[in-house]
Image 1: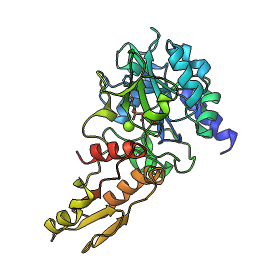
Image 2 (image 1 turned 120 degrees about the vertical axis):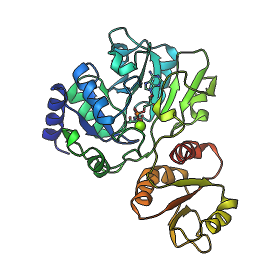
Image 3 (image 1 turned 90 degrees about the vertical axis):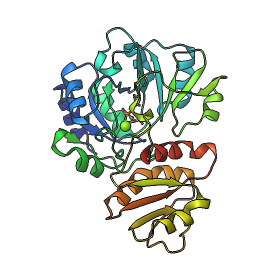
Image 4 (image 1 turned 135 degrees about the vertical axis):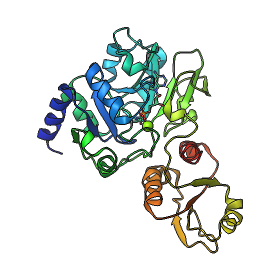
Length: 309
Ligand code: TXA
Ligand code: MG
C-alpha cells in the first residue's frame, strides 16, 4: 500500500467520510471519533441502533488520555498486549461524543497491530471509531472484498491490506469494576490476561453490546451448531434437503462438505470467510460441527453460537 493511498484515506476521514481499513482481527469501518457528522454517517451505513457504543482505535497507548482515564491495570494491559486484539472498556473523558459511547460513562479503546491500520491512524492523527465493516447483525468481513460486497458505495474508500490474520474480533475486557471481566472472548485468552492481572472473570456486559447479543454474525441460510456425536443423526434427519456440512471429517452421506481447520488459530482466521462461502452456496441448511473444547477455541465457539442462534 503506497503512502498516497494512506494520505487520501486520512483526508477523507478529516472531511467526515467513512473509510474501511484492515486490522489484524477483522476489517473496520472507520470514522473520525470526534466528529458528530461522521459518527451519524457511521451508524446510518452500519444500520446499527444509535445507543450501541463503538470502539475507538488508537495509534499508541499515549493517546489513551485523550479519551479515557487509565489506571495501572489498563497501562499494564496496554504494555503487554498492544498493539493487538485487546479492547479495554474504561471510564471516558467528558468530551468524548455520546455517539461513540452510546451515552454511557465508558469508552472502548484498542490499538490494532495491522501495519495499514497503524499507518492510517498516524496519518489521521487521532482516534478512529470503527465497528466491524459489515451491516448490523451480519457476518464480519475479513477481506477488502467482503467489505465492498457488503457496503459498496456507502463507504468512501476501502484500504486493502489482505486477509486478516486473527479472523475474529478483539477480546473485550471491562476495567471499570474491581474484578476485570471479559465481555467478548477473542484471541487473547483469560489465561494470558491473568499473567498480567490477578482477577479476571468471564462476565456479561451491563451495557448494550451488539457483539454480545444472542444473535449476531448471522448467515442468511438456516444454520445449526451440532455436537460431533450428533452430526451423523442430524444429517440423516435432514435427508431430502440440500445440506452443507462443515466438520473435521466427512460424515457418511454428506453431499456438500467443507473441511474444518484442525488448529484453533487457522479455524478462527478462516471462520467468517467459511461462513460466507457456505452462505453463498445454494443450500437449504448449514450444519456446523462444534469446535473442540479448550480455551483457544472459546472465541470461535462463541461466534458460531451467535451465528446460529
Ligand atoms: O476486533 C475488533 O474489535 C473490531 C476491529 C474493527 O477493531 N471491531 C469490532 O467492533 O468488533 P464492533 O463495533 O463490531 O464491536 C465492538 C463491541 C460491541 O459489542 C460494542 O458494544 C462493544 O464493543 N463496546 C464498545 N464500546 C463499549 C463500551 N463503552 N461499553 C461496553 N461495550 C462496548
Ligand atoms: Mg461487529
